[in-house]
Image 1 (tube, rainbow, N blue to C red):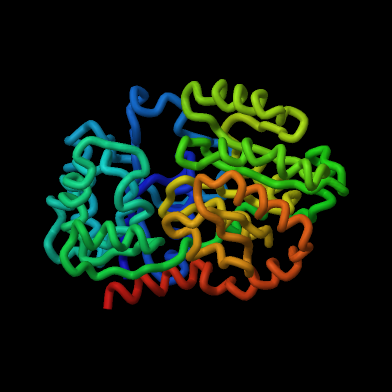
Image 2: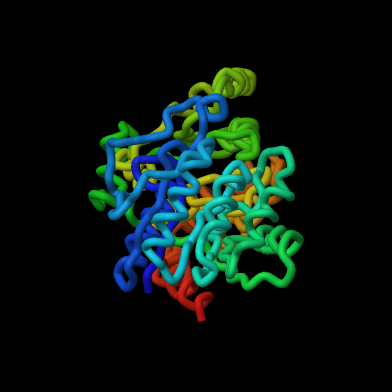
Length: 374
């Protein structure tokens, strides 16, 4: 099957770029895949940080044409023209935010009617507010032949926008690509300067309000009161000027010695030691559809504590691969972390993560795409 993929890939940062690259590599084992990516994804007025990372090519793919400029309609027409010339059997569109609605709508509108389109929905609707988000999402998604979603919430949102969609509900696959060196916990901790006796909890990824880091900071004093050898590592990139607010919260709750803050975007090749060293990954999200952070953790056999929001409890199996707790509940969060470090069920959780391996595989995702085409 000949496939055209639309979405961000290397050198663009972020989980969706990594996802697209990993999916392409796995699809290319049995299909002919060409990628149409961005020459400009977000204008700096919307996203002030550097959007590209050239340091690691783990998720890079070929062939790629960096054509799409989200504010230049001429590039949308050029993209449609080139896809029509390719004459693929299928176009797969990475969908996560209504900002892309105008360019995606224009591209798909100008494709030949014989070309089928599948939307791979990371978020049907965004976590943050956006003008006319429902109308914009509906405008684009109604052009889809089929859909893949990663959470029950996304499927519900999709069904509110599209009548009787052809949809597959699939879990987010695991990112084994971050295991570049295959280092063990002792080696990782030596590299990071962490004592082997320390209990390490990890919060990882872009730091946004909805990801609930503030709840983990507030819970930390109680956690360390019961388990004084627990230390939290926060590894992530702050949004605009949010860092000062979190630093003030850390100081307010007296967490300075309980927490290590690694600020800034982490290149792919530097991710491995943090997950290899961690005992536990914590996602205290206030809202979510799904999260690639869980799948990075699972690739290292690392159990997860996550909140009962979006698709997280569909991936974190309570009492099996970790614990699922209510959102915005600092007491429940502290109790879950304390329980994890006092019950000593790490090996049991790791065995469950291994049992779920096929459900989280990219082979399974490729099968879902092929099934939608039948």
